[in-house]
Image 1: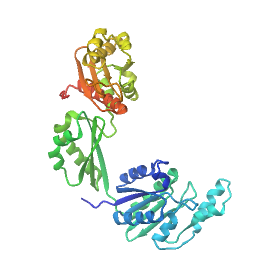
Image 2 (image 1 turned 90 degrees about the vertical axis):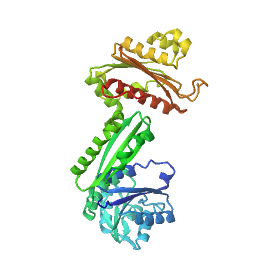
Image 3 (image 1 turned 180 degrees about the horizontal axis):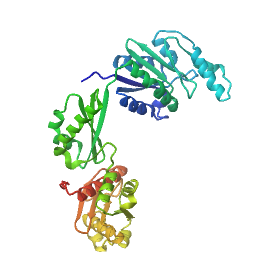
Image 4 (image 1 turned 30 degrees about the horizontal axis):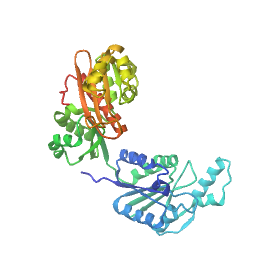
Length: 422
């Protein structure tokens, strides 16, 4: 595999460590560098402490070819990045004419007076090159030593992004011979991470040296990320496509999409293709299932409506659940779920009805039906099917996991090629 240029992101500021500010810069920089063929190997956040920052500089230089620093470039005493970079690279600080001109022009464009404190922004380590900040007063700094590059940028997101886009990325391409990094997400549903790993182990072991696999689990879903490294994107795309074809016989029933596909979008396309309409009867999910379905643009083509039937009286009055069913089996039962699905289908005229009923928590459970007990059901007038879920004690997690399970149930029922394995 070709040598990959490695980068580390270093974020400086107590406000990040304290959780007072969300570090969105690192995520954005990671995405930009990935598309540029530069691999992020570590992200580090350090507070406003001299020894910690200097140690972070040393460790980052040991690990990476490129060190990208954000934060700590303001004009006040707690902004330590600039003087510490001067110390680290063993060079004095002096007023930089280009930086002073840029800062002066910025203040003049705003109709503001350049104060002595702001004038200090133009005092920089003499061993750095100025990276123009077109949207602010803190110039960026570029250091190049022993084949390694340090770039220091403001922590203000829009200033940093402009600097990265206009100057830093093009310059890095000039300095380093970057590779191509190609990602492909394979989205699976209805199978746990360990079960999936067991099914595809031989395939994973046989992957080419330049293709790596990562498992990215979430509620009811596992994303498989294939990352290919090389010099020609079209070749990498062909390699990854070939590996996906080999994967399909092993995990095909569980694969529902790729990259940006969401399960609710896939369901929507299937409903449209089959000219089906659907309605939902929700108890424990409280409308979350309907929210997912209707979050898809164009869902009015196939989505009819919903009844959120929390109270048993609503289940009876609006969905036609039999009073005796509730007495004999309770609201959280296979029988009630099936009657809810059939009821919403009949009352709305939809071709398909689905339902949820359960104990989301954290209270309300019993020894026979503990928190996390959920029944979901599907009814299309020809077949009806219910499934019991035994989830967790977290209310939000249970609501979201139930909705995903229903969407997968719909996917399975609509597909003529998927074997029912639930």
